[in-house]
Image 1 (spheres, rainbow, N blue to C red):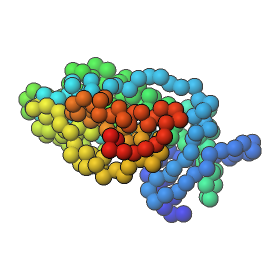
Image 2: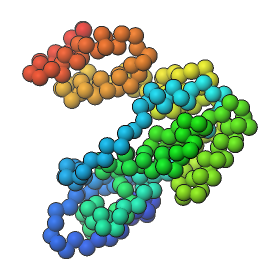
Image 3: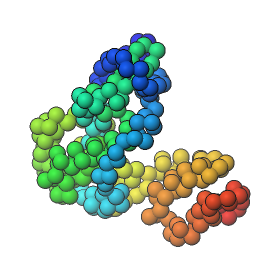
Length: 253
């Protein structure tokens, strides 16, 4: 029970709600560090926000090639955005200790990424593609000189203070010549793969069903820009996704 309330306090977005209407609400799974809630039923009836996320390749193309970088990470991501009071009850969930609802956006809501990206672009609209790039809560600041990077960093931090945007200092890196951005290593020299992520892909077991094939292809496509003739190499796997195709993991795969 103590761990649950500690988690609630850390996430700072939960308030008690009396569910006196007899409505069905989500069930909470309590883990050691996170509160996991299944919002699939809510997501089905939610009007979708189609605000686009940036294309990874385009972001990487804009950030690489600079001598200096500052990499910032938002703290608790979606929890920094308040939910309208009238809509808070829609996030209601039950657990062994009572009935709760979120005051701020929790993980699991289908529109959370689009909402957060819209907010970030609104905050940094005059800086994006000029001194920085932002992908949800990942902020990449760059400069052609040490001093320029410092000036750009100061501008971004002042904007964070102005808009009450909280950063996770433990995950921030200041004035570095290379760093990991969206799973890739970027520097003045160019874009490289993150070997740690490649090792994870190599260690994946052979897929046992269609879902497993899709997941494996998703991991592989992440680095397709570095793989010559990727479409040709991936064709045997794509054939396994055809309706009624037999899942035979042979040498071609």
